[in-house]
Image (cartoon, rainbow, N blue to C red):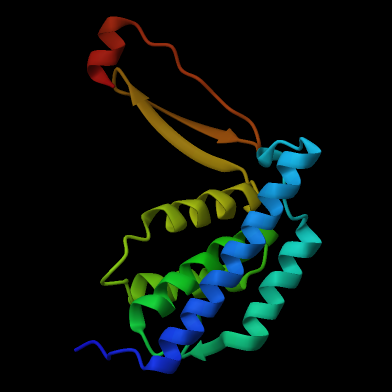
Length: 167
C-alpha cells in the first residue's frame, strides 16, 4: 500500500518543482534574449560530475550491493530519481551507474514508465564501453570458418542465393 504524502512532503515537493521551473525559465529567457539556440545549452562533464556528487552526497544510499537516491519515502519516486542518476552516472563514466540501474531494474516504478531513462543509460554505457576484439565462427554450405575480429573493426560476408539458403 502506498503511503500518503504529508503536508510537509507536498510543500517541499512544490518548492523544489517551483525552483526547477524558475531555473529552466531563467535559462530559456537568457537563451531567447542572447539568441542562443536551446539545443546549445549544456553542462560540461565537470559540471555533470559535480551535480552527480551533490545528489549522491545528499540523497545517495547503499541498498545492499545497489545504489539509490532516497529522495522521499515514496518507492516510485526513489526509482525515478535513481533511473536519472544511472543515466547521469553513465554519461560521466562513473561505475556507480551499473549499481543504480540494477536498483531500478529490481525496484521498478509502479507509477511511471522509465524506459526512456533506461534507454539513455544503456546508450551512454555502450558509448563508454571499451571495445575489445572478438572471435566468431560461421558455417556456409557445410564449411565452418573461424574468424578473429580486432577491436573497432568490422567484417562483412557476401553470399550467393544458394549459400544464403544453407547459412
